[in-house]
Length: 165
Image (tube, rainbow, N blue to C red; front, side):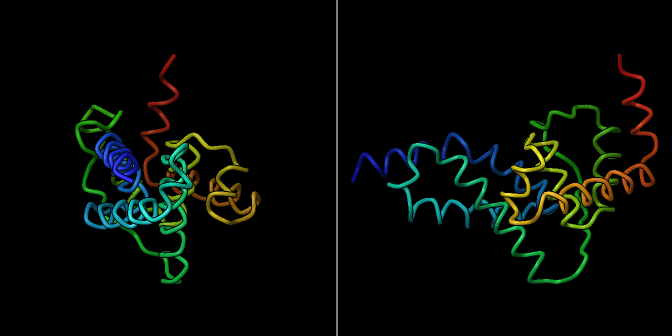
């Protein structure tokens, strides 16, 4: 039992920051992100013996499901003030970070969740559909709608991508 607790504590120490970044992208709010990570970790602790071999996948999937449940329960389109990313974000340029944050704030929670899974977590359409409990067609259409919306909200971001070799 002590070894299992030590294993869980080690996982929490090692992965909480990375899980928090993903949760922040999913929720758009630092406090909601902390709550999301804590809820997912609580569920992981309850099932640790069963998931000990692949805990990160379990916790991430739990976060996705909790976030989807939240936007389904609300039944509303909600936008967030993303404020900015932390220093560990892969995006380093401040102006670019602010542009991305502003653009993402214009998306619905569902659109942002799908984009986070597809492009930040690098999941396939099928994996995203499985993680969220929606159809592959819904993932495709939501991705298209979100990217179309981002092109309207931040056309200068598309220009940055086109300029890269």
